[in-house]
Length: 594
Image (cartoon, rainbow, N blue to C red; front, side, top):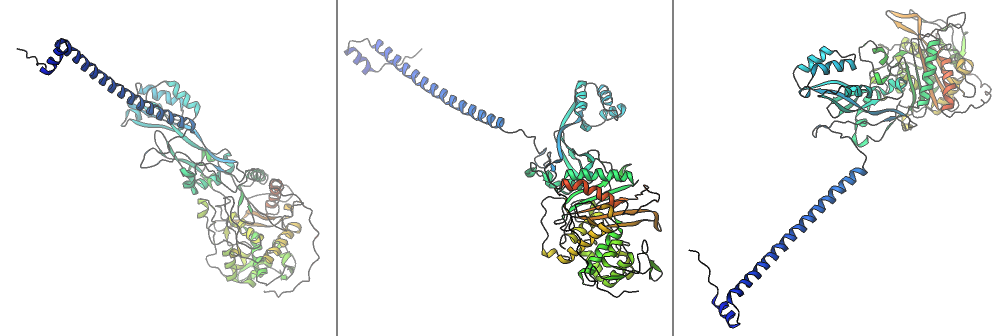
């Protein structure tokens, strides 16, 4: 039985008193209650719809705003492959002192395969071997069928090769994005830049690391994400580098030399404006160490340790002047040969029984220089050469140069003092020589060689010579070029000064009689030196005349002269007429030693 709820008696009585049928009144009440409930439900539903609409609008605006920000931002590749071990996929550019590009990156691809995705392994191996002739089809197939799913094929491919691989249409063959280091100037800066390679590789990125030269020394700086958009600026002037290399290459051929080196340095702060070593290499295709072309990696400018011959006479003379033992006009006994035990020191030719200090330099007298060194003594000579940097490797920013330690006499006797005075018995790099000549020429303040632009100037704490001695030496070096052994380096209007040096090449058991290292160290303009130039030729031979000549005056000096003629206008130096020489001062006679 269905029980029907009773209607309230009060409502029934009230309806009857009003003359209304209680059933009709109850039906109207229920209908009104139903309408009210439906209205409340509609209101609640509309509220929920409005809330959802607002939430949807907010999400749409957030997504739209983010898309707008991304569209307005330059696209960037991720710099890390793994969150815990960042992979530096980008590397800063390297530019010369004028902003010319020396090293940069280009986007390329690596090639790898995932064998689980392949449907035709033999076809993939065959196709890749056709595209890359250095790959063997059977070797590739053996690798693909071996253990593992992931296999590298090439760490770097060209766009043409990438298109050819793409045209194979084979599943399981993939390209990994890369930034590859390139050197637009090729081999012209190989020994300075060094080179780079892929250090770590992932499927989506690879880290480039320097292996030598500036790339190695400044590896952290170049790979620093905070500085990746700031180029590393060198002191090198690309225009001068190209001009010097062209001259050296031509002169190597002319004199049948096996090698050459050239360094141009600012005298005031040691900045290296140009440094060339021939033969050289292209860092885009760096030779492998201990490979068939390994010798190309050797820099004669910063690594080659040689006896530099009579260029050292400038240091002997400068020290004697600084100590007040001589003046430019002091007379030196040059009678020879100079005997020391069983050893004999001779001059290249007979210059007479006596010469002034200036003429000892002009005519390049070994005997006169040795007598000045004996007067100076062993200790002061060692201290002076140490101050000039000849006792330690060059501090230039090249890791290879740090191992080029000068070769000093094992027992520094008085005989060593005499031979070292004219460049025999002590070996150093041309970079050591350029640095020492800059110190002599710039007023006597020691400089350190650097490949970085905007190097600081030395201070009084770096003083090695007095300014007066420096000025006197510059005048003597000018006389060597104007009147002495380096006349072929005399370029009109540029007031070139310098000193030649010809050293016999050491061989097993002694020295070669027909092979030399010819060097010329120049300063210009001599009245106020701005630059130092050192040129070295390895085994040059001049056959232009009836007599075969190998000395630096006939080989290195004219090479330096041609170099200065080419680079001086680039450096902004204008030829200036030279003032006539002043009259000679009274001579001061000095006693000679036997």
